[in-house]
Image (cartoon, rainbow, N blue to C red; front, side, top):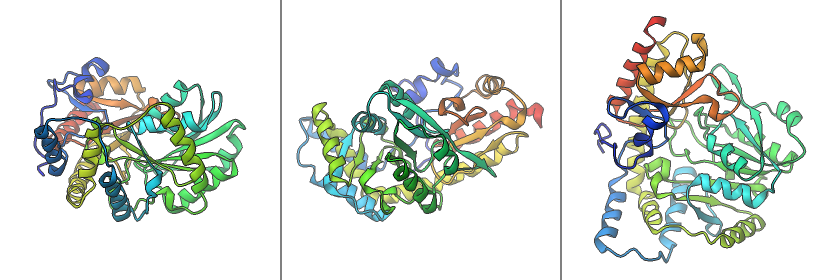
Length: 388
């Protein structure tokens, strides 16, 4: 795979490139899109071949016989993560934002509280608010540039109407791979407060030499645990809108199944075929190559950004999403954004959208050709040259 290949995504209905000027005032003609969390890489050839096979067949009817799809999910999770997935507990949703919304809708009621460890992926709060639930922010602490949880503080702050907690594991935007000990603390917290625990593990394949532990491997939590996984971030196939909600507990599984049936939800055949192809030995080889490439991107970006006085890129255990703190510059975030967008010509996510703790940050997507990362670093250094 040639990850250095420049693929022009302009005028292809790419949210990442075709919406950047409208939302950030950065032209795709001379700017760099580093906001939406998809990459600028083609998926493995085996995925492309499956789509070619479908189009050459030329009939797009209802999908039937999901045995190979379920086999592929079980094979991937066992071989890549040491997790024996319960076959009957696999539900396919239209991506994991939809999966989150389904969990909120199924397992909580209007007015209930849903806790988030902030800053965290902004779509969680959006779907919680849209379902007329209350977002309860449990701020992460920063210790030597890494996020940590403070359960004494969370125990004291959690209100009585909290019914669910959503964990982002690995963490987006901070890139933390939570340790087994930390996951055990999360599980204990959920049990103490009788919370449904939703673990969004969409970035679990994208780690830099740090072992990710699925929350499903933590003992004593299965009766309140909802696992969420997807191939979409791993293989850059987010447009297929396929994600999995995986539930071990029979009672929780029955409730979720009934809600899915009540809403008439079923997956699309393109997504199922793409996932089946991706979760394969060929897909695994591609991911290993991808992570070596992203690791180099990460090191180039961090070295260049950290050379700017007052700017610090958080060290990533996982993801291709760099979380950059500008608090040391003494500038307001608006002043920082003006330089990033107008001078560096980069579209990046605004930290405050991720909740409490994101006020001085921007998130940059480094899942792109190396030339784009190098150009972004050069542009940023030029935009903040007066600080050097």
